[in-house]
Structures are given as C-alpha cells and as structure tokens.
Length: 68
Image 1: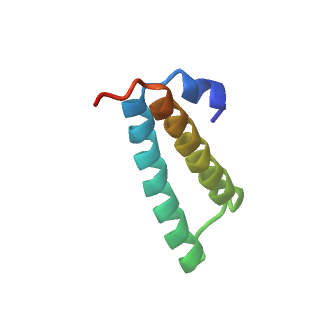
Image 2 (image 1 turned 90 degrees about the horizontal axis):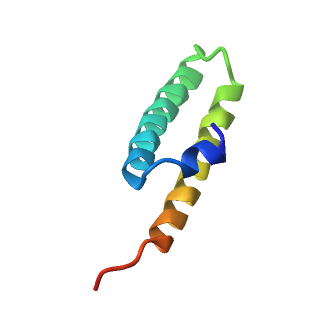
C-alpha cells in the first residue's frame, strides 16, 4: 500500500482500512503460532502498513481545524 493512495482517503476510510489490517495481523499471528503461515513477509508488510496508516491519519487530524 502506498502513502499516496492513503493520503487520498478520508479519515473514516483510513480507520476502516486500519481495522481490516489489524484483523489480518491477528490472523497472521495465529498462523505463525500454529505453523501454517506460508508468506512470512506478509507479517512485516502488514505491520508497516498499519504504521503508515496511523501516521497519515494523525497528520490529517492535525490539519483539520479543531472545533472548540
């Protein structure tokens, strides 16, 4: 997932994508524990995508005018 694609998303879409990746990360951890994981590089990709989404979501929230 590219950062440019994520920057085009709304904060709600980013939250949905984050939730989807967290579920995938959970499933990958179980597959690792049971020895069923075939693509070990996917764990690293998901972890980095989660960090990328969190960073961009934080930037978007900081840009938005805060209502008092």
